[in-house]
Length: 479
Image (cartoon, rainbow, N blue to C red):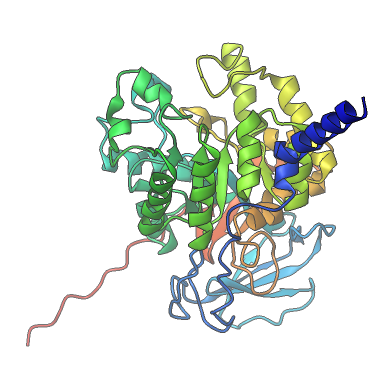
């Protein structure tokens, strides 16, 4: 009996050691993300994205200065709103003054925002700027017959909708071909209005994985043949997953987006490669694949999909963030009655389960940001969809102020941009919106975003997309 008990005890101990939760206690398998600040002093100007490439001091900065006077400031730090004057020079906030302080440049453009709230621009951590419409569902993932030009036009339309809703930064977590990189570059230079873009390029998944299976089943295997205009890249085996990461990095990706299904070796290889390049990793995964993602060392996890209590505890312990995206699952449930026809959604999923998952993560202390995942024609629901996501956060335990901080400061931190975005403080980029009302008291005020600046550039005026008039350049004089 003693021998049997001893054997039983040893087997139990071995099972605990081999369990996913216990295995993850040793730390992530992939290397930590490359410390981009280790070799670059803060005095060296760098690009305003995750890549942090050295650039000239005035790179992408508009000329001149402006001030916002007479408004109440909700600065995104969690402090109560207060009267304040904000001073912007070029693309950065240079001063936050008291309401009676007029110490700003004499030539600054003055905007009177009396009776309005000035706050950091909202962030949407989960967009697909080039996603097709529901009427062309077979092509949504492969885009076999769609040109890059058309993808860019779809993205431009969605950028306008987001900007008019007060969103000044989006994290694009899979779009077609090089379209998101083109849009990112043109927006950053001020050539097109819209929110600044942080893009993952293509979503990386395994054969038959999430986002790839639909296209193949619908008779469009081009996605499996690495169609360059696809929003999905299929990889098989650790080395192909590493190569898929490198391809997105070479295009200029700000992050890497992975999706189940995958093996432990595949996701660990992808995270390791991304982190070695200085890129954070987010995943669309569920159940056991979330265990694998945490074990690998990912930085964030999308969606309110099922996971164990042990996985939630490990997310909190390791600082793995959550972008719950309640809205799309609510839309799916209300429009079709359930999430059907997906091999990566083989579990119960309804409005109750998504809210309860959010509550569990909130109680555990998981860092949570705002993302909407508005595909097909769903951007038409803006700004109501963003307001609904904020309300969802209050349903799981956030105050109104905390929800707005999640939409600004915390979301910037999840993008690894917390040092430049998310709050209105001296030194931060001037991504600022002006709201006709008090959104910290009533989210509905976000229906009336009147003005928006992105990187110090006026891009929304009186609720309409703003683009400066063309300035004629004199022709060369004949000699």
